[in-house]
Length: 125
View (tube, rainbow, N blue to C red):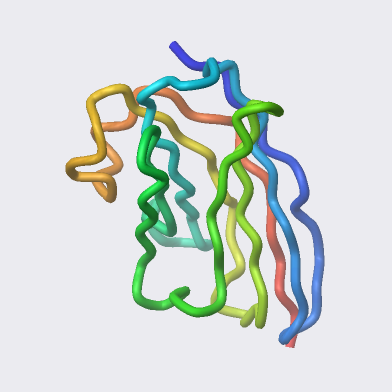
């Protein structure tokens, strides 16, 4: 099981930016797929972005394309989510997740076996 710890959440006005970080126990060169999910009030946990462990392939949910960027720094064992042009509908608890089964089905919540505790992101209008 991978240890994950999110940070960087907070309150920001619409149109602002915020960067989330996920410190992990994944070793350099590992094949783990890393992802960000979020859960808005009263809704289920939604896929946001994913990055593969080898080729650094990235994927995003349509609603954040062009605004969010996921990246990973192997030297620091950290995954980032740069969020620009934030909207009130981006509000929610953001979770970092990891799976060891490859990049296939990167957006399926049930395939991720390791989760962080989450960090709150609130976007005001």
